[in-house]
Image 1 (cartoon, rainbow, N blue to C red):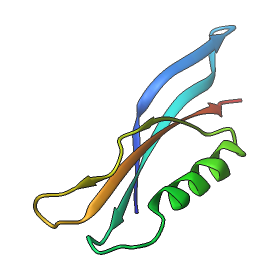
Image 2: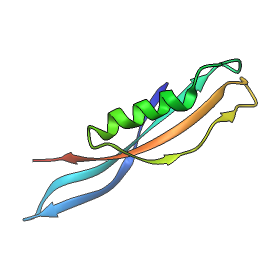
Image 3: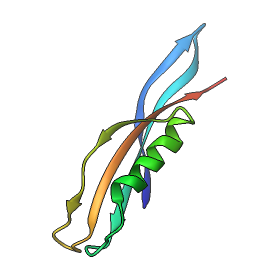
Length: 85
């Protein structure tokens, strides 16, 4: 799995100060082409765990077989709020 931080989405300001930022991160899952386990179960478990920490999934690209390495990949993108105070 690869975890990548995405650019900040938005920020909240009050009294001339930034008090929170909306952040985004993406997780890329890699599976070998002959993987027989339940990929959806693994990814759903990660989504539930992050949701318990108020990190919400907003995009699921779906499983794709890469032409170069023949791996199966899926990219999930998440939003979360980071308090600045």
